[in-house]
Length: 487
Image (cartoon, rainbow, N blue to C red; front, side, top):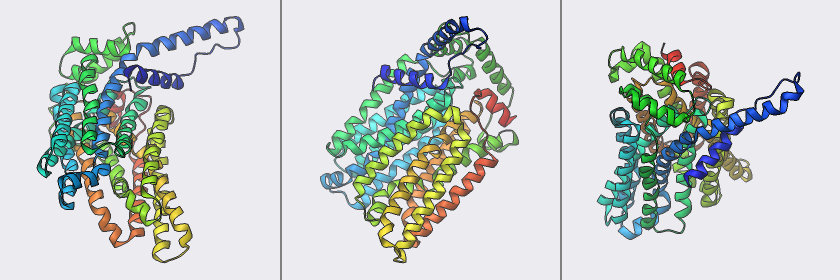
């Protein structure tokens, strides 16, 4: 996918979001010229944002790397175990160590992004992932595999924080939601491509393909500006203005936006330097509760248990696991792409509520199917109900709970606590991913239908949390959002 194609796609997306300027019918003679002027003005404004689109494309190459890393172990399991004579325990370590690397990346992501800049930490993450892929390619035993997997996990953990933060800091407020959602689109795309190419490439060749997005990202970073807000926070005022002008277009008037950013940065600079424990002070507590709470809702609703053991669930329901798994991957990409079209119009909160409601219903349907199977009731309907429930679950998750928490997390934290608070939220997310995937089999052994009833209850609590705590952030600048939450 070229930068030109990405820019073209996002240009069309922009045009769907802003209505053309219309003239009042009281002046019929001037209507056509005014509409043409409005169209030309809008097209000129869209063309002036080409650097925002290019910067977003470069950043989400990191999201694609994330997806490639996450999707690698499933299609390669049999081939790696056979070629390197690995035991099941050794391969399980190879698969799970990715999550521990991601936790380490999450812990360090915020402080590194504040120290090195958003571009600097993306370079670092890409280098870790590239080194990891090379180690996996040349591996002749379990140790080299684990080192490579740990390195790619670290890069994943950092990317999961810095990509949505970078996009939110460079995007105009009316495009921020759609562009930030592309992070999740590319993650799903990376996972899907890994599954597809895993059917005809060797495991070493798949590792080499992981180097391609790393290379594109490293090269692309030379052609895009640093986050203006990070530059302002570091006191680089001249570079801040140059970066903001590049992102808004050479003819754009950035005076008002630049003044708002600088005024907010100066307000934050007068506050004491924030440490981790300071996140729980009253001033910042609400934003921390929102960010961490959304990550808990996202992960503890069961997504990683369902995804990691999808084949087993389908197999127990009497369906072809490979066919349905491919359907699930395609569904994730399609639904998440659709969300990019509506998130800045519908808003973040309605999407979360609709997504949560769908998750509750999906868990109840799946749980009922397993209840019928355990009690040998209506067995002919069990496979259809199980697959319907799981596909509804995946579709509902992709429709809001998958992407929107990352978008909101990137919007709500003031820049003086963004490193610490964002790192904490990302760590909670990765811990949740590990905890759910680790406990899923134990829960299924306890009660297959009870497991999905537990997840239904957690997702119902998530709906209550969104209604009572989470604010709507669409159509507002980052400074307006953060001042309202933390004021």
